[in-house]
Length: 552
RNA sequence: GCGCCUGUAGCUCAACUGGACAGAGCAACGGACUUCUAAUCCGUAGGUUUGGUGUUCGAGUCACCACAGGCGCGCCA
Image 1 (spheres, rainbow, N blue to C red):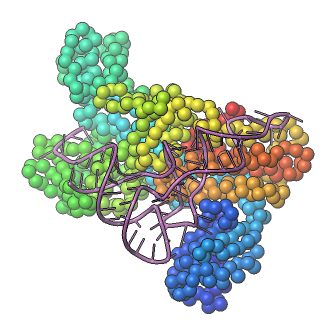
Image 2: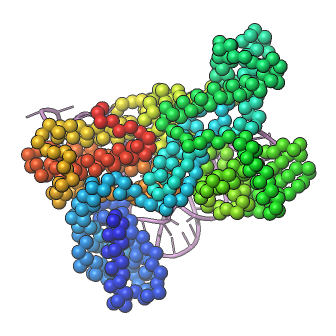
Image 3: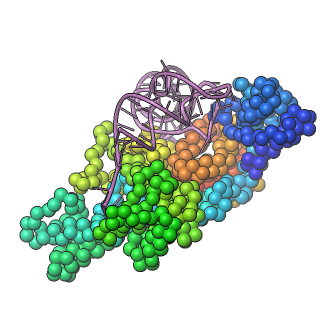
């Protein structure tokens, strides 16, 4: 409904031009129709005359002038003009916009969801932090981006799976066990040397204390004790991570354990496939993967000369497993410090017979916390990182998520803790939420009047003739384009920016125009507009996982 | 040394995959509360898009070269 109207107008225009012999039949016209940045330029703009110019050997302006003649008679067009070096700007009749509002009101916000996925299955893997310590702020950003991307793809015609991968088979968990073991000895009064390469955070001590206070039976021998404590500590930490994520509004369909790859035999299957295809080869007593066959990267080791498989092997198997579970497209969300890992993994899915495009990456750049105008230090090794929990508790979940989504994910993020806490106009979170609360407030007042709020859908949208009202309708319909653009480019932050823009129009309108008044029919039409607007705001806030308060 | 990311108003960032005069917010300055919530609005000022070369009707966007910052380059995990 939305883009079909402008497309139809241009197509008719082309038809006319063809029948008049203005355009040769064999010319390929891949022009675009866009909504111009400048509102004064009209509802839509097309560059078609620039595309035609080289074929017709005429100036774009002249072509535009000819094309415009036939558009002028189009019943859908309110205005048409040639602008600048040859753009064709045109606007739709108000009645069409009013009609769209009516359609959205009766069909719901869902009618604005575009179908970009055509029911493809997409698996988004994110966070995937090993349970060796609490989630820090960087994980939080990844969690927010992953969660919102999943929501976004789900709204745009994809079947979405959310997964968290845990390297439980590796050495990190065992190191955690050793760390806990030594802290335990410390608490028992045996002053042991605590090496630098163990986990330094206080949480390890807390877990050790828990073992003592809870009278947890730890096996006697050192090896057995370390094994036991590795299990014990990691499961406590994992519970903490799940709690943090839950409170942050992030859930997963599955926590995938690396160890299950060994149990199910996918690891062996992967190695067999690679050997069969000659992509795995032996050298210096190790088994190598021929990365160079697909990407500009060096060959990598799959099995070390001591017989141990590398993490890379598990990762290939994991991705094979994902495809086997009939996911068509995989999205991996990683910290940007892992970007060097991309070529080999991309190469591996090609080795498995997949297209490059079936595996997409989203890199999450670091977060710098700002407090009192100065950056807060953050180093995992020293154990002085700032946790997601701390930030969430300090600024609140809504502000935290909103701030994470105000930047493109692969750009550095400066997170100003003081700003996020401030309840003033400097803080964009409240700007958006306030709009929602204001609309709800109008509705509360409207219910005091004789207007039947249940029957708003009968309202006469043709009464919405003020420029600001028509603009609001246009901005509402734009939700459709925003969802499409963010889904296609995997850029959830666009939704956040859209919200700020949309809501800005509303605040402006609110200050200028009084909604409730004596003209009942007009009031009803305006309330309908606001109801739809409210629904879009609420839907978009829900999409980014921020609450939509009815009162502030 | 090689590779990836980033460089846009004083600050933090946009710019719909190449479109029109590069836009917001904050900070600065000036205005609006007997009116549905002033957590709001209206206005003013602010720029050689780090620098250069090229591609074309047209470049913040694409290519190449500099410069600056961040990150990564193991039979580590």
